[in-house]
Length: 97
Length: 449
Image (cartoon, rainbow over all chains, first blue to last red; front, side, top):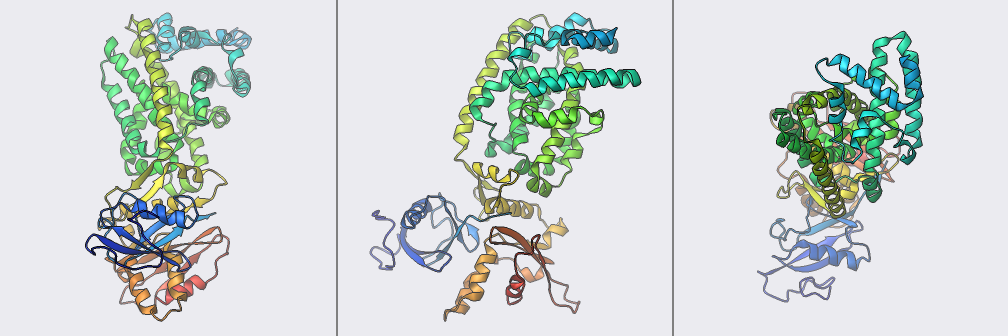
């Protein structure tokens, strides 16, 4: 979190050049969103980990979906087709019988 | 007289077995058969193991159950022998196999202890079954008289064993590939009975599912079970109840073994260098075990993507997810999504039935509920965003839309049947819920779309 690539909660401030960074809203099931500013070329793993840390849960607790598609940790936002301001949904793994 | 001999101990039994064997292959000298059975086993006492017996092995054997089963089998054999001489012979071979299994298990045990219970490695699955196929195929084609070929054959056996082992223990996911290559595999199934590379697979199987093995051994109809029977089981069944199928598999494997055992002897008869072979085999085997252990450790954290890493719609599934397929365990979303993805992968314009269906993933319903219950002002934009979940697909042109529902630790399914345009009736929504836990609210929600 202290990392320069994943920046502050609830702050959409555009600190740097917009071309290099984008903001992504990561929403949980209760519509609480955390806003991350990420470098477009940084793998999403960083964001995912930061999110989990922020939520005080173990890594890999959540599944990250964008438009219903799974996001993979090693993808960069660009590869995943994420654009500035896009929302990422998080789900916990479901278990059932 | 034979009966008496068999009853006394295994040694006699095996000798008898060899006799039977000789009868069936008149041109084979019995001593050679005995010797040649040895090499595939890694151990130094392979010779005595196979040829005859068990006395020295028995005390070392941890599994008492196997012991008792062998005994029981012998009794059965005795009884059957009188009524059905032919069957008796078969039983005899089964007993022999049981003994072999016991020996192998003994050999395998150190490995098993390390692993706990042969953890499967998912990312290897497809590769594994490939190897397996290749292995069997190639071993079949090899000229079997030279030492070199036999040696490679053994290498393959090792590989095959590993591969198959994994294949077996990861039955459910693997099933997909199996189904895909159903034809190929059943072909392999046929090969199994001919090629000699079946011994090791047998070992692994029997040690993993030894209990099931035993129960199945008592029946005489094992041979009737073709591998393809198993392969034709629907994958769904495997997911929900992978164990019964494992049982099936372990039933037919041994039966192949018995036939193929005969082959083995044929294969190796001309060889003079079996002691060297044994040593090599031993080293090889040990190496393989080590590799496997390392691999297993590494595989624990491995995540694979299906159908491929680059596929935008890929789903991830990881090694540990396999534990969720155990009986009594909850099914988890990665498994579900994997299977959904797998089903969709089969869909093509040619495959009409599947092509007409659209599957949403397991998170869809949750999101839908959210969308429906969303109270914000920007509800419309919410829906517009939500539509991106099925962008590129006109769901109303599909015949069926399937939505898995997860709520309160329970899975159910909604099927929306969308009629053709010419029909008057509106979409029909079916909610399939085994426990009746989920309310028809889902139906209601879906109608709104």
